[in-house]
Length: 144
Ligand code: DQA
Image 1: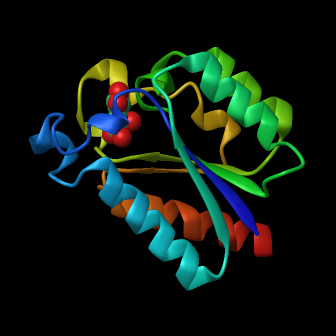
Image 2: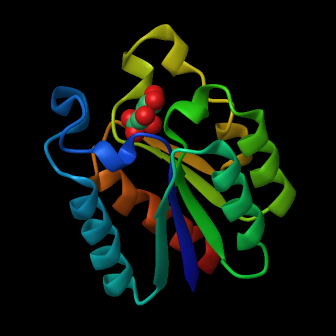
């Protein structure tokens, strides 16, 4: 099983960025958490981060026929990227949306996700551990 883990804008700034909201762990630590979980489950993961919407759309499209599912934290794009929603729908791969912070308990504009309707589930507010939960959700879904 091959899973693509995509991270949107500013997630490369983890550890530095608003640590009271996103925690003190940095992006390398996020990647290690994901890789450790993949090893435990015996699956392959490819972890990528971009600050650019079009790059994320390209990676989603290229995942078709290559990956079995996607874990995605679209970051700010969650709240307004119809392009990412459409890309996820276009490839039709099972996807899980992950948010480090609890988007439902923050500003009103963060409460709505335009990308979630293309996902089988959303995990929010569990910190970096949310990626572990996201991978497991996808793994269970794919294994049926
Ligand atoms: C985020 C939440 C978004 O609202 C925000 O724009 C992010 C990160 C999270 O992981 O909590 O950049 O997706």
